[in-house]
Length: 130
Image 1 (tube, helix red, strand yellow):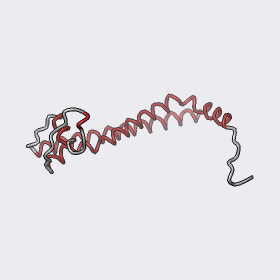
Image 2 (image 1 turned 30 degrees about the vertical axis):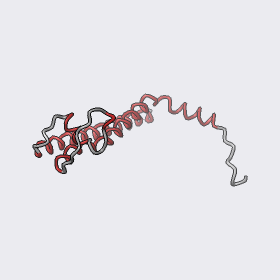
Image 3 (image 1 turned 120 degrees about the vertical axis):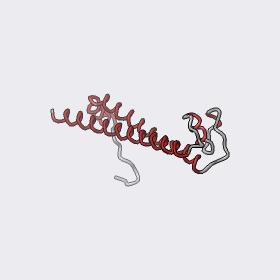
Image 4 (image 1 turned 135 degrees about the vertical axis):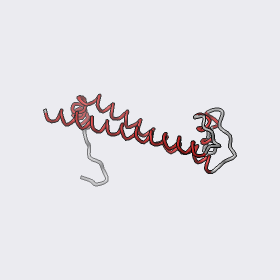
């Protein structure tokens, strides 16, 4: 066989075998994939929670965005602070509120990850043991 040519593989039987083995778990796989997507989105949003605190501790001259098109990294802090109705003059309350929201996001992400991994392991283990 020539090393620069790929072998001629018939994919249809491989696909049919894979489909046959995956079909009983399609609902579980869909739930796991959707939850992983949700966790990924939540982990991406989590750093934005610090934006109002950073704006209070390191003041900027930018105003909050009036619509989504005006939103950028320079005004995300004031925008989130105005959405949450935070008094940016009170540094301690902004810090406490941001810390509580960040902790809530972190706990929610942890719980979602644990629920999905525990449920998927339990269901897969139970079905494989049969």
